[in-house]
Length: 404
Image (tube, rainbow, N blue to C red):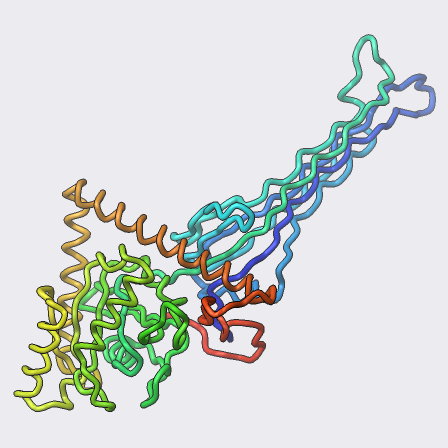
């Protein structure tokens, strides 16, 4: 099944039913009077977060959704039936945006959370409503109001505690295989990972966290090189970033330069995202001798001016991965406890989260504008190409998966 994290759809709420003009006509009853009933309200359109979904592929080919119209009123003062509401399930972590105004209507981050996106039309009134002592045979009715219609954009950002950053072949997928039950594809060529992968890491009894692996970045990703930066939005809701660096690259490139490249591309996507807590993880330590490890580690730290947490691991041999997982769990627990005890700290994190969301939203909107130019035949040299592999490709591809 194809992984889809952005779609555009059109929703239309049901129109209200019309009121009926009718008069009572029965044997032996003269001038029975008006008995036209009201119409029914139109159905509304809701979005609901469904924890069993992990992709927006259901909305890739069906783009229009209409709620049921309210029935017209009936005689004998019968009210028309109300139109059924339309509930559209989406994955947890979906942002609903009005395509016309770019207003964020809502963010579905909790299972079962429901959001009204189009209000059903109000019912029309039958002629019974207009009778009075001076108007005993009213012939007035009202029509039902039209339901709201909207062009919507749905954006999915995966919900994970920890996000993995790194160049292609840095060992991110190998790491997630080592610490969780997830089994993403692993191979000895770049861009093996084409879509985000999620895995649940169990640490001790009743303790776990979710880690997200996104496709690797390369230099120039902000301009569309490689797979571009379209998947960086999935890191916007993480609480900790792991910057994984290959200590022994096959092309004998400089690990320090590789680490600096990722930080630069991250800053170009969202300066606020670089303020997120980030740990440096040097992978593939099993490929080096002890003295070479120390030299590579020192070079990377000096090049980055790094003074944060540093870990040296071998994801393939699972060397140091358990200790790293324990440290991550300890950090997440302490972070949660501090947020509960220190309102100022919680407020700072909330402000940072909002800045990251705003910058990511602005960046994604710029990408959408460039995509529209390309499709309109106005593409120029400054337009990103990172969106190309998501275009009308009907073939089956991998999808995001969540393995407990």
